[in-house]
Image 1: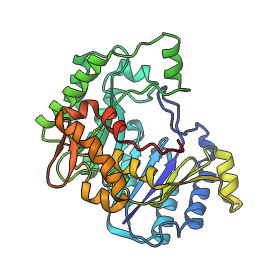
Image 2: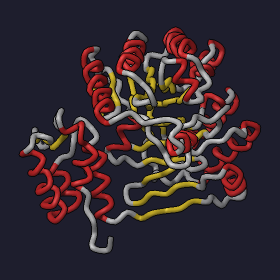
Image 3: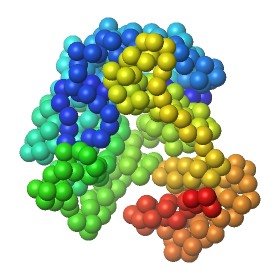
Image 4: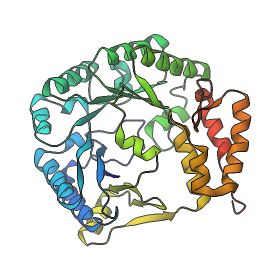
Length: 379
């Protein structure tokens, strides 16, 4: 089983916190979609004929695409790749793009999962983040998705915004769970170098919340999701039973995937490669049949690090038996020595051949995962 990721970099305007590759050059959408279709054709053998279990349109803002552009991409994928009949096909969207007419178009396509970038239901915070929708538009968009017949609806929230109070965070969660969503991704605000948010922080024009409040926000997130019956299947992802994101889960379990588009990453199990993060250079290169990308061959130590880090993020954790089979005795012994230290403090737990973060451990997960990392002598 494998996945396909399609990067759609177009945005009407840029959010101040985003460091993903994006552009406001919407007039180049048609040329870009043509290039994507050609890249899919050029790289049709990358996944070696494996069945496609998930397809994910991410961005940027995929909901900036027209019906014609979406059909062209989906028809190309289904023509070139063996897509499973029950494949999960996720479409990221901005709330104010999801009109009744646009949702009717999406329903005529094989898209069966909507992921909506809400971020907050607080209009003042939305304006600060330079989002282009309002809280009311986000609320109504979720309802329109349900009315259009979508049953797998995910929303994203961001917490830890400058000046955010616990009451505001509780209101965001309460509003989210008053809606017919099946999945929630909730991320702490990150100050990424080079973004407008980072620049404001460096100039002391905004201030990050303190660590104590940050932890309290996360505790409230876990408490509230449990209260409404959502499972925390990954540190930042929660869903009703049966509604885990299959595409994202495949990333965490090491499933191969093909990433197409400017800046998109691909993984075949032993190497990663990523396309050039430049719209014009991407289009020109693909059009000429010479895709511009960088590639990294992953040595055993790097693959071990990725295995432990990604698996520990999930509720399932990692299997010591599988780790030994994949990486050998040296890495197994190293990992078990680290695990023993955290098992004694109850930050990890071992059950049914799986080592996973405990409830206490999830709050210091970054430090625990860092302890497991293998550093080669060359490093």
